[in-house]
Length: 336
Image 1 (cartoon, one colour):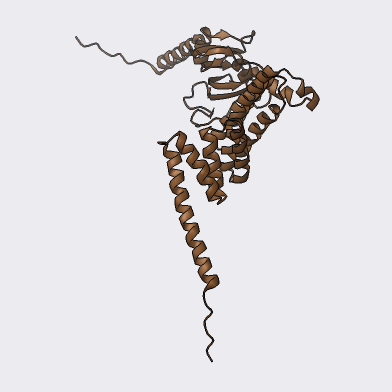
Image 2 (cartoon, helix red, strand yellow; image 1 turned 90 degrees about the horizontal axis):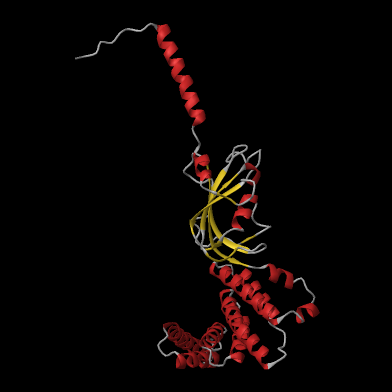
């Protein structure tokens, strides 16, 4: 059986359309937004529901301390948008961010302080914890709630370090050794991260800070041993950094300081050999590199530098012979 369609008057059609539109508005007003649905299962970490948190992947260890420096990846989203309005997720080496200085969103600062190393979490920031009533035109509309996904790659507790370096030399000299060693390790790790970003001038400054706080004399044999053990990696890092900065004489200086602590350290011998090679001090370079090779005969880097040394030395000798020939060659007789 086929149902018969009855023709409806225009007035009846308009009335039905108005009723449907009214129902649609009512249904929409009772529906929850995407962010509102997310918020139902999120933890209130600010105490006023201004910053809500959901852990996506748990981290480990202690939570990020105040005044620390963090290495984090993040992406920020507006509601109903699949593309982030701000992200550093695809950077190989995200920049370091000092809490209280480099993070502009209050919500991110509050959220990060609840996180652990390796953790990935999702946060909702209310306007008061994000971009405020004005927003940030043209990307962020007024009074916008935003969603951020944050991963804590690592963090450095730099509060003690920052406090230490504002002390006078006399005050630094009586600072507890255990704390000094921790500060030096923090500065060295800081330098390592900057070095990996090819920021060699910045990494050099951090290594020098580590070296300066280790410059004290130990009061006992045990203290001297601990200080030397902490100085060795810093000296090696400075030797390598100065090579990258094309300052081989400074590299040699720090390499020799490392050898003064451990005269059989392969890295120190290798760095000194590289520095001497750049300085064209070929006999010294050969001595250092052969010393490294004796300790690690199958190391490809060491053997490669010895081959480079041989090539450079041969070229140098050829140049010297050519110079001698020019100097002592008989003068050609003048034609009348």
